[in-house]
Length: 394
Image (tube, rainbow, N blue to C red; front, side, top):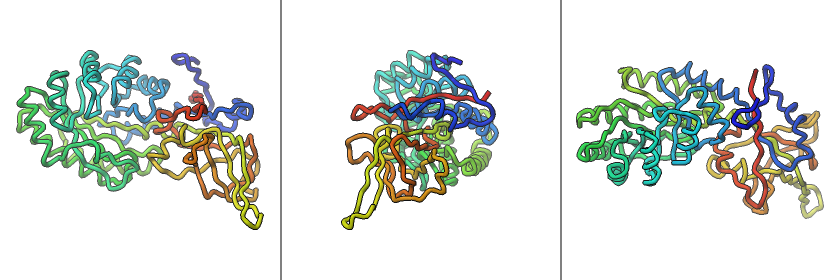
């Protein structure tokens, strides 16, 4: 099947990675390969609707802006969190209505605001007085969503140092300023941090949001939207269920009025588990000690830190390579280091591994590579970023 010019291959029951590798003939290709399972996105959306039916997911495009992924989610009916003019263009280009989009960047260039105005994308975040004045000048008809700071104690990427006003000292002042300028504040938002692993973080944030709603209504604004941001795990469904239970309980207590629209900005939740990256060993090197004995094996892959592994600069997580070798578990292991293909000494993927003795042409797989990978990847040193092939269950 061709979807927007891209071929989607179908499979029965489970996606067989080994079969995909065999059909791709990777031994004769220099480029790494992303295997994207679009059915994973469907499963994630079903899980979301099951555990948090009141909350409308708005996919965070920055997490993975692959047009095939964006269109697939658009066809499933999700909303979208866009941070720039180009992200707006991408989403609107697939027929998504402006009402399904939140322009969730508190500090937007004027030209981006003008484009949002032209396209009638009215909902957008703000967290400081300069941006309120900017909106008065460039998009006075927009709906202001006041973003406040409320971070998790455990998150892969905290955001509070950069965005979000102080809920107690700044939020009321911003809403008063908006009122004085005849602008509409219609809600509030927060983001606990990407990759949150603290359930209580959402409780604290929703309680603060309730207070901001009350202040906004007292000032005279019609408060009707709460954006609970992102931070939801992409591969730990048990943790997601715990977060969902906490969020639902807090919303029932603080926002029992069903007329309040609750949205969110999940990114890695949808796409992290959908991608498997297959890399090839293209070179190896033996490192020996002064006694001449073998100390370490070093392997060089056809993708690295400047490619699909770029997120390791920002989200340092432990990766476990999967070996596509017969009897890999029974083979003797050697101390090993895995490098990317570039000339840069920072291009180190993993160290202190125990791996069998690999050879050029051997393949290694890395699961859960869909979040904050390809949007950051670049062809540094002239090495191609991975190709992506798409699969879906029948």
